[in-house]
Image 1 (cartoon, rainbow, N blue to C red):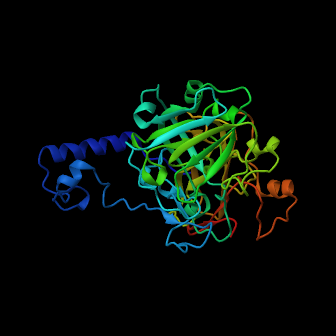
Image 2 (image 1 turned 90 degrees about the vertical axis):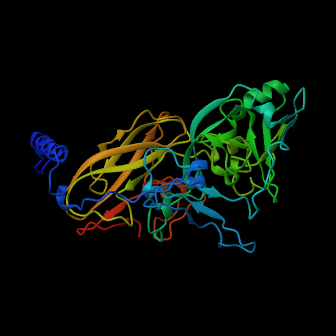
Amino acid sequence: MGAKRPDRRGFLKNSAALAGGLTFGAAAPALGQEQHGPQMIHEGKDQIAYGDRSRHVTSVRIAHGGRPSPDNWGLTFHIAAPLQDSVGVITPSSLHYIGTTRGSFLPDIDPKEHRLMIHGLVDRPLTFTMDDLKRFPSVTRLHFIECAGNRSSRRAKNVQETHGMTSCAEWTGVLLSTLLKECGLKGSATWFVAEGSEEVKGASSMPVAKAMDDVLVAYGMNGEAVRPQQGFPLRLMVPGFEGIFHTKWLRRIKLVDRYYMNYNDFGHLDRDPKVAALDYQIGPKSVITFPSAGQQLPGKGFYEISGLAWSGGGAIKLVEVSTDGGKRWNKAEIKGTAQRMAHARFGLMWNWDGKETEILSRCTDEIGQVQPSREQIAKYWNKPYDQTFSVPGLDNSIQPWKIAGDGSVTNGFA
């Protein structure tokens, strides 16, 4: 691979000698460090009741695009997750991205008073309490959510700005199909409308076929209750569909016999119901999170290129990484088992020679969809491929990162 590898036997021998010296009371501090322990964290009531992360970990979300923020109500429209600091595939609840619903305030809902009504084209319209829902068989699944506006631009300074409007969490709840069977679904029901409790009444139309497949009515997130910013006490999880369909503060589902154009749907779905159901399924997408724009490589040598891949079409089956601007592609390792409609972590060992280059990733999902280049997307939409590039649909194009000779990393589109 080019660079001289360390002597493992010598490393272990030196480590054993160091450990032995410490065991038998070596007088000199190891590696020149002073002989004193770390600062102690006092375990007060707050730490016992709900723990904090280390003060040395500083990853935070940021306000991000969509409309001027704060808006006329003093609210932030979009909040992006810090993908550049992510490890594994699960986004902590406190760092999960947020897409607002048209400037509404967060509802403060007492779960004891909350109800979910299912009506319309069913044999038995029913209203469920939270206790009722938790009596049904539960399922726990890993799924991503992504905003339709999650896309790169030449102005973006880091991966949080290009791709931070996606997150992946472990969701727990009851399958919507279970509740619909309880209500007795009529044969004429082909669509359903999901409505939340936000101030501006957002509602989305989706096909019943999706509801009977894998839609989840979720009350749990990452091992605890869904957080208020994510729809407490109840939200809809629609695996693979863009974020606006994942209705927060879910309170009503109506079964209908045709496609309804609702407030949330306007501008997001094709008005032709024949293609509306698939128009905004998230396409295969990947991004390198390390090294990525805004980061710095300290020098040439070995690194693990790491990133995330996901698709609304199913599980990720292949991720490829190029370290020479797309001339050659190398198969990356998918860490663990890729889940359907969930983030997959990938990695590729790379020996950087210290020269300027460009790195990219692309993925393929289980139904054979391949992540396109920006040139391919421009050709599909018959749009000019230039610095002001924008497309009316979802943008799942390949994201390049430029690495300079000094190790600095910048946006390849800038």
